[in-house]
Amino acid sequence: MADMSDLLTRVDQLLDRLDHFIPTPPPATDWNADAFYWCAHPAGGYLEAVGKPHHIPLDALQNVDRQKEAILRNTAQYAEGKPANNILLTGSRGTGKSTLIKACWYRYKDAIKLIEIDKPDLKDLGKLLSILAERPERFIIFCDDLSFEEGEHHYKALKSALDGSIRAPGDNILFYATSNRRHLLPHKMSDNLETEQIDGEIRPGDSMEEKTSLSERFGLLLTFYPFRQDEYFAACEYWVEHLGGQWSDEVRAAALRWSMTRGSRSGRVAWQFARDYVGGAGI
Image 1 (cartoon, one colour):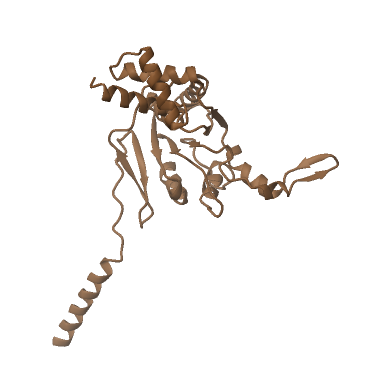
Image 2: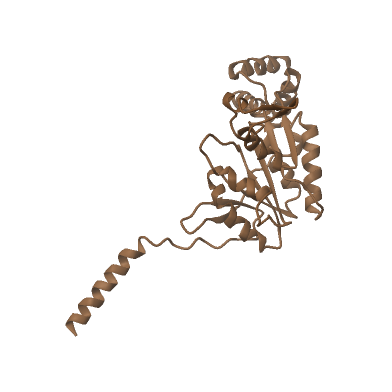
């Protein structure tokens, strides 16, 4: 009996040690939330509810009317259960790409839920799609600043999910993404050397085809351009007045100096200037 008791004690000690190596199950998902963030987890990841999603009014986004109209139309179609496209927003930094996606979603948040996933976690995309396929709600999966370097392979999971996998996303899932790169993958000079001319026809090499195929799987591609000076001033005026300040020639000159120190003109730079100016003025 003493030997048996000693054996059971050792077994209990061994089980206690093993508990440290066995991951705890992920928390349950609160499906009542409007927005979620995909969190990596040893057991495969889980959806964390976002209590207060970032929101900026659509009217605050200046000089992107064409892009705004296209995203709103596509999102409205999706909210109504009609066919809609995955969207890729590319172009200049600070022009409101990610904010525009969140603002357009917010208008239809009663019909669509938003899920943000980071680029490194795209490896979990298969599991996420499996979870969402069983749900009655409609979802937009949002990935910000999507681009890949040589040797990264997370893009293959996204590529298959967009188009090409035997397990296609359900009708309740769309992908919205932003990137500063048009083709998401870097193009090298050596890629052009693979181009062939056959009977007068130019045929890109396999490397070029692979690197352009990902962005082409987004049905709607919208490009954002740097602000002209008058567009930048319009954005500055909006934000200065929004924060309680008064627009004047003096403020205009200060906004110009601010953009010169930043080396760019964009909605983000205008927002940052307004916060600095209005805050510094003690308004």
